[in-house]
Image: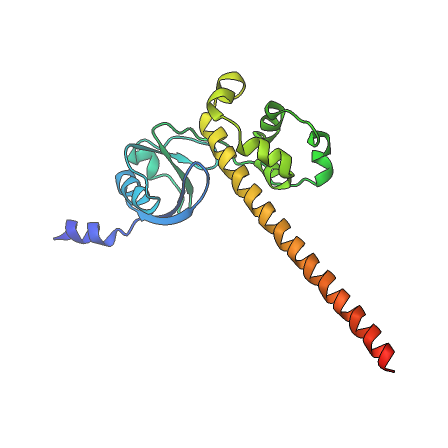
Length: 198
């Protein structure tokens, strides 16, 4: 009876769990490493074998003895079998000027090379660069320059999304411009009409 009380009384410690992309971030309360892996996999919708590492530096947590030393609210990363820990991307502190040297004819390889160091650049690219990236073939580029095909596929998808958003924004601006021109023309016509009637 006393053992049962101890088991039910031990509510575990809270942890933050995330995926290799660091999104989403979920909270999990666990008593053992096995308990954590089961709950984290369910919350993050991950199937199959997983590895638990410290989100900060990638240290693998592979037994309950080490798991017991973790502080509450420690951030943990859950990796699938084919995934590896990566450090967080540097904060996005750049301006359009930093991309000027890449605009107007930069080759796809150079573009990918720049983006692999900081994905924040993607949001600052113009239409031609986004088109180049969204039309690329990750298989052929992975063989030549950059072995991480998953990154290339994600880059292609993200570029396509940004391209669509930029086109939609441009369409909205064009429509607004037409509306404004029409309104200005109507105001001028009304003024001329009022001046003639006076």
